[in-house]
Image (cartoon, rainbow, N blue to C red; front, top):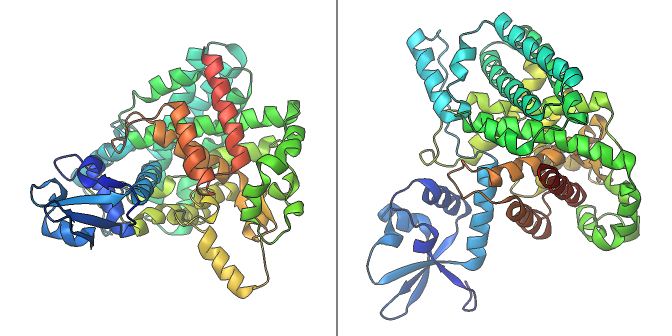
Length: 483
C-alpha cells in the first residue's frame, strides 16, 4: 500500500455489530482474495501490513475494538471488494454445502423439513403446493398455464392480465422444474430422462407461448411485473422469474432492432472509434484492421430465428437449475466457498445433458453463463476446457468473439455463446437492482447501468460492449413506455 494511496477505515466498510449481512460478505471475500489490512498505531504512527485472517481469528470484531491500533484497506482493495461483492450477490454465491445424501428413502417428516428449508432458502412457501402434486398433475398444471397464455395472445390487450399470467406461469414452471430436477439427481440417467420427459416437453411448449406473447406488440408491464414478482416470498424464484421474462423481452427487442432499423449499419460506422479497442484486446492474435463487426459476431449480426429463440428462452428458465443440489443456505450464515458456487454451473450443465431432453442450447447457456469472456472472476466450462484444448493444439486461437450457433462454441472457434452473453447482462442487472437483496442497497436503473459499464466493461472486459449498449437502449425504451 503506497503512501499516496487513499486509506479507507475498516470500521466504515464493515459497520455492523455482528458477522451478518455486508460484514459476512466482505469478510468472506477479504479472506478468499487475501486482501491485507494496514494497521496504524495512533500513538507512534507506526504502520504494518497484516493478514486479515490472523487478526480475525484472534478477535472476530477487531476493527471495532477501542485501542491504540486503527485498521484500513487501500482504496484499490476496497474497489476490488465492492466489485467482488456485486458479482457475489449476482451469482448467489452464499450457498451452503450440501450434506451427504442419504440413499434411504426419506420419511414424510424429513421431506417436510427439507421443503421448509428450501422455502426459506429462496423458493418460497408455494413450493409445498407443487411438491404435493404427482408428475402428471405438474404436467397438467403447466399445460393449463400454456393454454391460458395462448388464449391471451389471441383475445386480449389487457396489460395487467397479460403480465400477471406471464409471471404466474414462469414462477410455476421454475418451481416445478426445480422439484423434478432435484428428484432426477437421485436416480440413474436413463430413469431420470423418463422421469423428466413430460415436464421438459410441456415446459418447452409453455416457453414458446410466453415468447410469442412477449414478442407480439402486447408488451408486458415491467413495473407491474416487479410488483407481482415481489408477492412471492422466495428470492431465488423471484430472480428466476425476472431473468426469464426480461431475457425474452430483450431478445425480442434485439430482433426488432436488427430487423427493422439501420442499427447494424450504424454499428459499422461507429465500430472503429467506439468498439475496436475493446474487441482487439479479446482477439489479440489479429491485426487491429481485421477487427470488424463480422469478427465480433460470427456469421454477422442478425435476427434470432424463432426455433433458436425458443431454445434459448428455455435455457434462461433453467440456467440456475444446478442449484437444486445445494439450496439450503441463508444469507449471512454460510461462508463463501468458490468450489461450491462454481459447482452449480457445472452440475447444471452436466445434468441437463445427461438427465433431461432439454436442447443442447439450454445446457450450454447453463454451463457458460458466468464466463465473463474468460475473466478470472468467471467460472464454468470455458477456461478449463479451453486450457485443455490449447495444450493439445498449441497453435489454435479463437477467431470470433461471439457465436449464435452451438458447434463453434464446442469447437472453440468463438470466445462466447450469444445467449450466455445476454444472460450475463440480465443476471447482473437484476442482482444490483433487486430491492430484496440484503448484501447491498438496491441501485436505480441508471446507477446500475453506470456501474456495469464502469466495472464490467471499462475496467474489466467481462460483459459484451455492443450487447450492453443495446441493453441500455432497451432499458430506456421500457422506461419511456412506462411513462
